[in-house]
Image: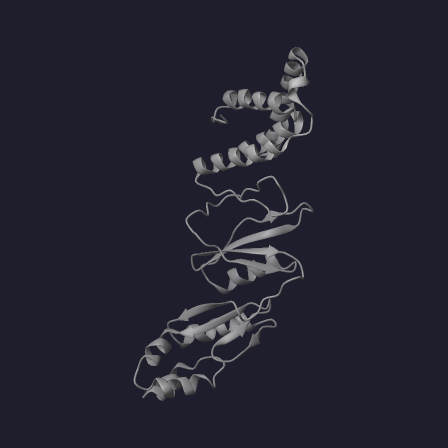
Length: 259
């Protein structure tokens, strides 16, 4: 029923049909055009044109069947269906803000290949944190921010080591704790030292057994790959005794314990 073709003429015809059916003339057209074309200027232009057309239709045939000028609940449902249908054709994912009824679309990068995305809660520091993590991991890349109603960054996406993350400016209600952490697998002592120093810089906090908190309170485990090999060996108890006393892992000391 709700078919959107890529050509402008077909879009205009469908938009006129929606305006007559729901009576929500300007709001519906403006949002539909904005969401379909992805540009607010086009949304305003074609929304205004559709409004004139719909008003002519309503005056010519009577407005009683159109109902109230306020969009109904079906309006929101239809918008979700239309935008998600558009995204499926694009290969994008529809993102719906928990605080709004209209879908908020990701800008730019297609993030559909990753099934699960860690969502990190910050208190006004999402953008700064994303930039910090991208600077620590050498292949890091910032995404495009999602802005809130106040024009400030609400969600900042970023990618490190091929893993997508979302950083949310959610407020002061929730804090990070050690029940969730991210493990960094290191091939040698040089990598252990690098990530340990970078992540504890600027106010981070060292803990025991390779654990640390960065300056935003997020927990990390900086673990050398060789530790797992040593823990499977005959001197596992000695290795465990050694690393239980360590903060940052010392690979040479672990190997001595396993000898």
